[in-house]
Amino acid sequence: MARSVLGRVADVFRLSKAALLSGTRVYAETRPEPLTIRQQNHGIRRIVLNNPGKRNALSLSMLQSLRDDLLADPSTLRVIIISANGPVFSSGHDLKELTSAQGREHHTQVFQTCSEVMTLIQDMPVPVIAMVNGVATAAGCQLVASCDIAVVTDKSTFATPGVNVGLFCSTPAVAIGRAVPRKVAMEMLFTGAPISAHDALLHGLVSKVVPEERLEEETLAIAQRVCQASRPVVALGKATFQRQMAQGRDAAYAMASKVMVDNLALRDGQEGIRAFIDKRKPVWSHGTDEAHD
Image 1: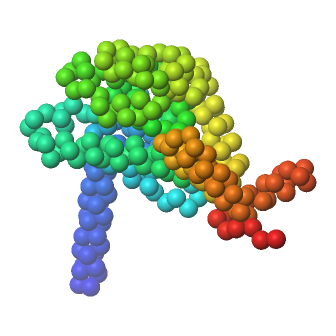
Image 2: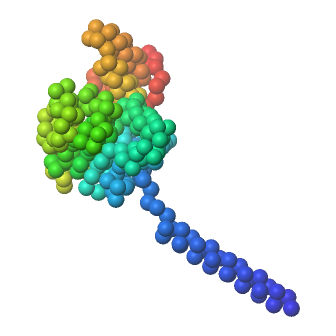
Image 3: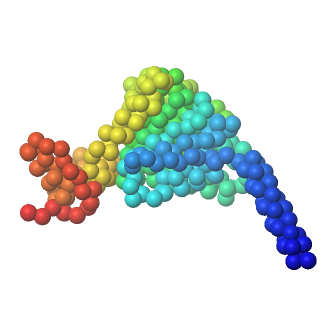
């Protein structure tokens, strides 16, 4: 009798396990792909836009996922690279979210979240690099313009075509108008016509144009070079650059001069100078504490 009861119990456990495993397999097969993919190695965080079926549109969900990836554990972070799966880096906002049926409240949330993400990229204490192989339009172009550095392939194109669908690219214009000359920005915004990667380089929208087969290599080389510097020195320098660009010349010099003095007070500031004088490689502390004589 005892063996019979134990046998039935064992059968129940086996059936339960089989059902659980079956359910797990079904869930794994039907679970949607993540909108963004985040990986990090040796201080370099890779964030990949991962909705190629929808041209990596910056839907509200995509923007929220991107924001979460940017804000994830910053303790060992040194540089961020944003790239995309598929032939389109990003086509901009998901227009299905911008119909009147969605309502003004939802529209407001979309644009507020987008502005938050673009501002966050520029306020991050580490450099953010756009690695672009393909088309970047509207808010996708805004994303490229918001990054500190942009490495792109020679087949990439950039446009702000909102005017052609009745929605002027006013928020992309904030970033683009600060990245390229005014008249270039206005032509892009008024006509919606795309510009080539080489024209984007000429006008300052991107940093470097490379063949497709060298995109990964060139981008990682920049990221690795950033990782060789002191983390707090890079953070101080990025924040100062952003602040002084919004100021008049005299105010910018006054602020930047004070920051140079603050930089010299850092342990890493003095370590770098001593290492140069001693003709050796600096040993960074990556801390924000001040040097002591």
